[in-house]
Image (tube, rainbow, N blue to C red; front, side):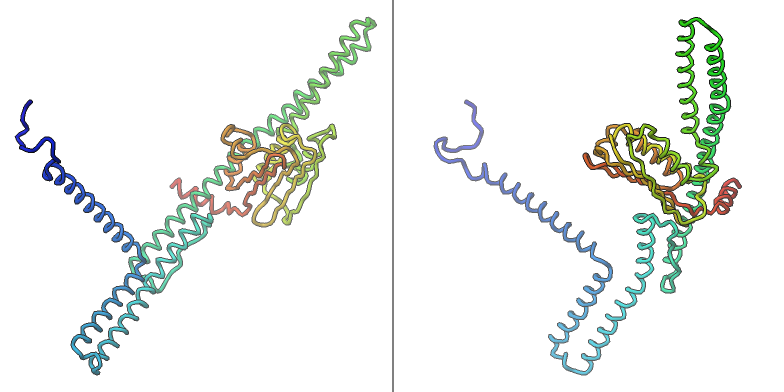
Length: 383
């Protein structure tokens, strides 16, 4: 057996020097690390204290130090000491007031940022402040410039979105006219020819086949006309959103199995065509969902509009569904797909549904759009 070079009694306890120094060294390192972390945590919490409270603490410390010094010198009752303490106290108050006034513009900056970020108020601007110094005023002007640019970009985006929607609607209207004026007319002529051929033949077998063929053509004609109206109902252009929603409710379920009610509260002369087209598509999709998936017995279409915005709601008493689970499983579902179309015109869509308690689909579109400013922004962008 080899020797380790450390003489000790094998049967006795191990020497103190072979164990303890390692443990002590580790304990000291751990303790110093914990102390360092605790110190850094205290410093971090102290630095997070608001500036006004830091100044209160610093000035209070100065006053306390002066009082301690004067007390130690047994001179705190003298007139000079009292004047010194009074001057320090007045300086303390003036410091607090000046700092509070200097921080007021910063609070206005924070309030403006909060209104824009949390409430979507893009009209918010940092007000001019007589209390702000040159640097703080420059920060406020810079933020206002950024918000002005953001507002112009949003106006430009809405203008582009309106153009895209108008182009889509124009194409839908063109296809609908082609179906109604061309395809439907061709099918109607074929139906008349089949009817004439049926009357001209005396063969019962041929007559039966012609009658069957005429029924098929008649069904195709009705489906073509229905598809033409679904693509783009002319009543939307001629009479507006309220009339179009009423027409949709009357023709959505001709079997009568679904009760559809229409409620309106429109407090303006006309809803712009772009907003009317978007909201009509919402009504279409909401009704389709109620008829196809919800197994509803009653559906309410509600149209509301004032000078600022228009809202369309589709409420059914169907079986409902879990909104979060359905959106995660089928993000391209029709009810969720219309959200993108509504957001193109700076609108919002809310879907409320509970299994067994029906569904409420609500879409809101702003109506106050200054097209002149949007066009000017577009031209400035081109320059």
